[in-house]
Structure formats: structure tokens, C-alpha cells
Length: 410
Image 1 (cartoon, rainbow, N blue to C red):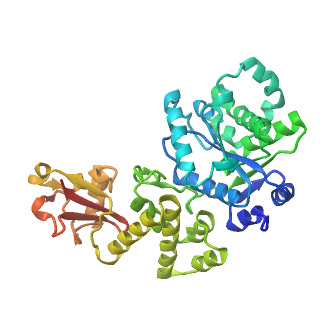
Image 2 (image 1 turned 90 degrees about the horizontal axis):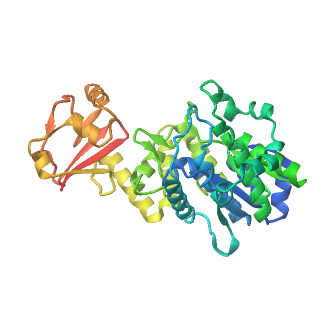
């Protein structure tokens, strides 16, 4: 192996914490390492939040290491308290199994599972049939409750009440690492920084129980400058599934991120050389938009393919330049009957999700933040009907500088 992948991840900004930095770097430089990342199957698609982790897996596999994508068919039935102020809602086994299957399909776009280059495992295979007494005797004896209660993932739940149900989660995740170590000689667990306490639990369990080396490494979490997790919009999560977040909407999300986050995201979420990342990140004022275009295109290309990325970029440029229409712009379709008597602007804003509520729609209209076919509209009760459609047969509603939606007739 020429360049040590540890140095690549470090330079690109991934690494936040390590259990044994020098040993991990040495290990990754001298042998093919089997590592794992866990994905609790809480939805039927991966999100933009998962994408940083997926990129790390891709870097590791490109460097010759072997990823295990561990689907949380078992742990999802408990729910990880990390980063949560409330207990997760419980899901049925059928829903969790379906979600895990979808995760596997999506991960296969980024990771090669052929010829033992990567493994997909599901912790339901060993967690759901555990004998509780045996589990306590085998695993529970290695955990100090005093030490567990100092972990951040538990501390923030103590005020509202941490259930014993959730308290088991750290033991379950640690057991996963031990099990993967037994089955596949997995030596390294990777995850987001909110997983630090759980990862340490697994590392220490293997070292105590097996007298073998095991390691943990966490990645930084993608956040806005206010510290809020990135990957959320007014509509909700930014999904990797094109049916849930269209390639255009996905592109627009990254095209519109804060200036101060551009260089960081280029390093973490693209494969551009770091010299180019630094050059683009140094652009100022209006020129930073060029860097944002590159960022949005590169990420959309990895997730949705070059053709979709090109279409999204062209649609975005058309809107930014002259308000031109495009088939790739998010579109809501009404019937001729619905538009016969006209639909008021507040309803249009809520239906298109440009505004989450009618009161928010009213506020943004009164403040002059809405245009329809490039004309500012300040009367919130103004109705739009079929005869208001332009020559392309559309209404283009624009909210602020970045919110666009197209109305068409079926």
C-alpha cells in the first residue's frame, strides 16, 4: 500500500478521536484490516448524514481494507440513546428488516461486496436469540455501571429519565464488535463522534475478553456553523434515495450551504485532490459560488451518477441566471378542475412545501419574499388559475433566493 489511508483521512478532515492513534496508523499501513461501521435501520433510506461515513468506507476500501457494513436489525429494536433527548419510537421487526434490505441496496452503489472485498452482516443474527442470563455472565461482567453513567450518550438522558431498555445499548454494540472480531477478525470500529462511548465499550471488551488488540476511531459530525447537524431542510432529512429527495433537490442543498462550510465539505464529501479543495475553499465573496457548484456537482455525481448531476447543475444554472424552466425543478401538478377557480398563494406555498405552515407562508409573502413567474407578489389572498400559466404551461414560484418550485397542470 503506497499512501497510508490514515493520512488520507486525517488530511481530508475525517478523524476526530482515536483509541490508539500510532497503533492504528501502523496497522493500516502494514496489513489489510477488516473494519466495521454500524447502520441502525431506522428509515428506508440512508441520509446525507450517513454519507460522510460512506465516503470513509470508500477511502478505506480503495486503500485495500475490508469494510463490514453492519445492519442493525437487532440494535434498532432497542434504539441508540446517543444524541437523543427522548427515547426512540419502537419499530416492528418487519419494518426494520425492510429498512436493512434497502440500506444494503444503497451501500452496494458505493462499496463493492464482490469477491470478499466487503461484508454485509446483520446483528439480528446474533442479538435476537441471545439468552439473557448467559449474556450477562459473558458480557455484563466486563462493564462498570459507574463508568457507563459518565458516558455522554447517557448523561444527557439522565434528566428526562434513562430507561434500562436503552441502558443495554452500549453492551449490545460492544457485543457486536466482539462478535465481528470472532467471525471475521474485525479489529477496528469506525463511526460518528457521537458513537465514541459505545466504540470504547467494544474495544475494551475485546481487549479484556480475548487479550487481543482492538481499536476505535471516530469521524467528525457534519454540522452548520451553529452546531446543528447538516442534512436537514424545512422538508426534513436530505435522503440518498432519489424518490425521497430528487437529484435536483439534493444538488440544491449542497449548492446553498454556508460559505464557511465549503472547504470542509469538499474535503470530506468529494474525491477532489486536496490542492484543488484548498484552492476552491479559498475563494471569496461571489467567487465562492463557483466552489459551491463544484461541491454540489461532485457529491451529486457520487450519489446519483454523472448524468443526473449534469441535469441538476443545468437546471440550477438556468434558475440562477434567468428564471428559465426545467424538467428537473421540483414540480407539483394540479388538475384543470383544481385550477379552474384558482388557488391562493398561501395554499400553493404550503402544498409545495416552500412554507411549512400557512402562517409562515403569510409572513414571507408580506415581507416581499415571494415571486411568481418573476413578479413579486405581496397579496397573500391572490389566486392563480390556468390563465396565469406562462408559455411553458407553468408557474414558477420562488421563495427567497434559494427556494424554487414549479406548478403544472395535468
